[in-house]
Amino acid sequence: MKLAHVAISVSHINKSLIFYRKHFGFRLVKEYPHKGSGLTIAILKKHDIVLELFEFKEHKLLPKYRRTLEADLQTIGAKHFSFAVADIKGAYRKFRKAGVPFACDMRVFDNGARYFFIRDPDGILVEVMEEG
Image 1 (tube, one colour):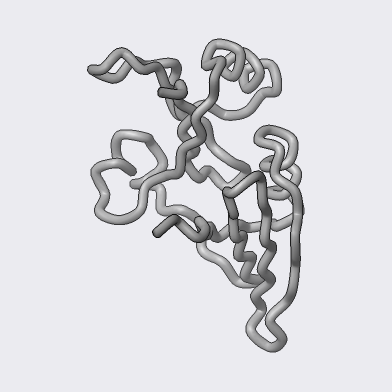
Image 2: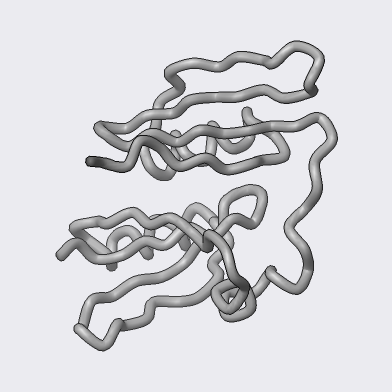
């Protein structure tokens, strides 16, 4: 068994597509509207990873009480997705230089692995962690 895809709801597919293409190398595979529902879906892919973006004409923003990393992690439900990178320091510098919003600076797990969290254009948490 393997993970089929990760789906996230976004406010603007094009803005999110630019973000995930520029910062993580995803490419658009397919985009299609669902007639009459106000929903458009975009499928993005990089290697074996598939992101499914949902854009509703009438959407709701992330609640204020979940906008900090600690508060969001304590709330029951899906939290974030993570990308492992070989050069964590290089990735950190790249995101800082690009002006991507950070949810936290570099941290270290108990096992010594380094990680940090950024936010996509809608404030969704994305973890960037050291491979291994």
